[in-house]
Image (cartoon, rainbow, N blue to C red; front, top):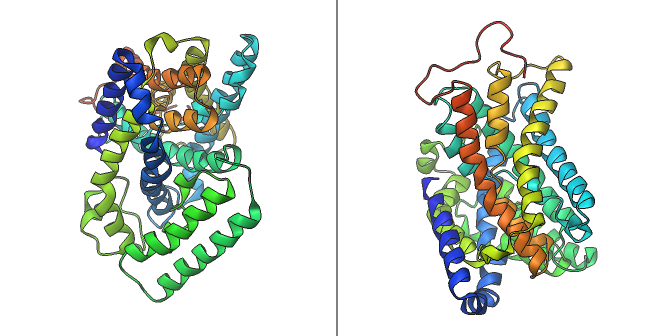
Length: 379
């Protein structure tokens, strides 16, 4: 996860290059590199995200018990509805109807960078950290659904989709039934057919391994997000994650390089709409829906305090990777896309904002965890 800094390196390289020599940057990135990174390389990024979502539903996982996961799941829904609504309101008020298609951009939460920011604010044992991780997992799961449903890469063709997807699922099931332990047949056979189903059926092909992944032999229980034990577990899904964890970090470097190169002059009202939706709408939705969960009689894990929930809500406003991906899916090349990209990149402002807010509330990564005591369960 620390190697996610390669994404930052790729992003900074792209920004410098685009502002020094935009023509040469566009000549490189608007060709085959963009397709190879966004439509092929990102398949493995979303596969690893889907793995964490799938394992979170296993016994001992944070999504295994709907009762325990209810409030974070409600918070995730609020953390998508509120920023999307604020985005649409601001685009309407500011007279930018061409931005409407990007309503899902501020729905995203970057798991890795949000986690890294949270570790700078809360003690390692603080209940806000697992709450944030669960919220981000649910956020990404819903984000995959939004990407598939609302951002087709071409006109939808259900017949073409079914012609490839049914064999993809059938061969994946057959491999599982034969107890195939190597992950390569799942990738080349099931994944290849699934990629064709999505690409030729009109859905973004970056999701190709998402329906195939659950067929891989896997552990019977969850060992926790980012658990080091998973790298030595023998099952196919864990071996796939171990084999592609480092390559995916280099994919993210090229993702940043191919997508983040925007002239600084592109900053406009669309940029600040995305930033406002993430930094204001995200924490507002998370806090309000957490309060709704408590009002319904549900219990917040760890009995978080109001200020804890506010801070983790701001931390969840780091959209970055997924937000940047959503901009490229929502808008064609041009000034509107560039404005939205700058908003996705500026969502990093949520990190220092959350740290400063945490310090104002007396939070410190070296302090004793809060959340115990009378009234602590109120969001």
